[in-house]
Length: 395
Image (cartoon, rainbow, N blue to C red; front, side, top):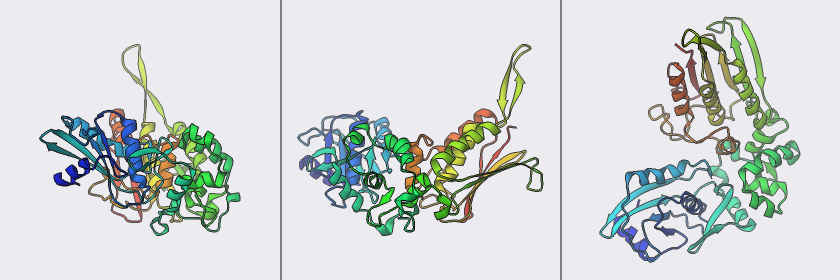
């Protein structure tokens, strides 16, 4: 973060392509557009950008008192589901004689373009505006190929004909990109997909993320991209199998089918509340199963040939996904710290409404299980080859 002297120098220089000043404390859209623009780093400074809250247009502190609530609200912006991919940022309070300043420091993204509510924002000198098609293309071409996660890499043996473009146009594009941008857009489908990290224009082929999401036959290219569901009549694999299903195909439809499966498997039982009234309790809360299953699909390693295992026993549910904890996530800081092995898949699941807020799945599952009377979920995190989540029946 800045020293106080560096902060004052930025304030004295007024607004630029690295600095935005504001006296507003509650304009979330303005804040997120500024963060998006700094993360895109259109001038390619490869330096931090700064949103300085509590500073007027002349570069002077405006007498603001920066509260803990304001700092939390600004810090929470990095988890705003409308910012995709999530930016790296920090927030710091500075107390100056003329008033407090809250400085939001935003790192340039390695995976531009970053969007807010489906629109790419950039800074040209002191002004912030939506990017045009050429500016967006420049950001797309800036990504470093060597830094790409698996779902951002080109699927070199695959072609555009191996996708279902109608699925992209009908289900994903309207949710991912602002309607006005779509109406103004004259680009072909490949270029539209490239702007969302789904097509590699240099290699002229879809990315692995596009194959997972919209491929006609994803298993042809990514053999482990499926989910195995098994339900046993007992508490171990030695019991009789009562149901065995395989979920494969494009991830858009797999997620929908898994939603229906979870709803069908939940069993309710009547519980008397009084002499004349009873309620229906479930063995498991659907939201907890859903969140942990989605977590496994979102964070799994797709470079493994193993599927996600979704095993339902009489006394518990086990969800096993290939690939251990990723990046900055460790057994010691899980689930407080999250990292994203598959940024394209993660963004798509958020855009399509399957993930409400990045990094909240395990927390929501814990809350739902506690409310339903189930024990807290258990996790096996030490194995680098995979993660296991265990949900036990209501006690």
